[in-house]
Length: 80
Image 1 (cartoon, one colour):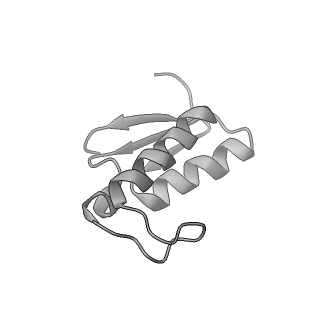
Image 2: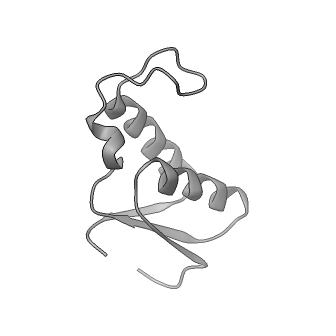
């Protein structure tokens, strides 16, 4: 841990997307949430996400987390 410009509460799709945008602005940031992927992780099929005709919630979560980590975002799975 350390000093952050931004702490994002929640690691569902909105929190992970916020992390990706924070990286674009060069902010040192941390994402904290109790369920990685949020409710999306339970979706067997997501049919309305741009760029994918069909993808599972688990796969989309995996891809979003990978993008967050590649861009320098830190994630802690814990309650806030």
